[in-house]
Image (tube, helix red, strand yellow):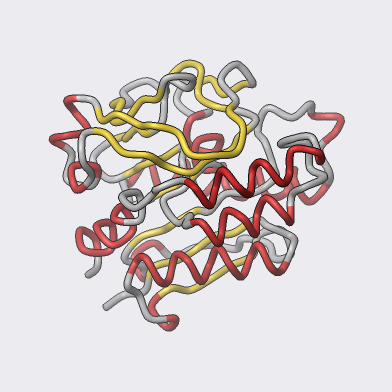
Length: 243
């Protein structure tokens, strides 16, 4: 089997390693079948799509909608590298699943708009599949309604041209969409379980997602939530595209 490629942007080792380990666990892939690039420290050189089964992009602290003057050289490089790769992925309709930061990367192309209108606090939220989502080869593995973990400052305000809305939420209208037949993005995190969410709440305590005094309440809410369905997206992605 050709390997899958996992792209991460998290500078904190605990969060970065936890995210990669969770993707491994829920996708069912062995470590040798999921190559990893940490974009916050390594440039994304030419990726040979023919040598891969698919690409999975994780989340992270970068936001496409950040003011340009506030973006670090690392963020600007990561955005440029991902935009170039995303254009190739879209042009060839190559299998791609982007979680959270994938919304900013894919959602801002082809006339799409990503801004701060529909940000959501960290926690579990109900997500509903659209008719297209229920019929989709990837999203159709999920029940029509399920809870998912998320936490984001930006979201899709206007979908890219030709995008198919697959999942929606109450506070955030776009929770998942598809471009072409094989390029997917989710606003929620399919790789997150309770322990990983608690880890991220801890790691990103000072990153502006919540007020530090809310920490204990967020951890308690995470531990009280029942989130079991979103990880099936990862195993289904591998099932559909492993070659």
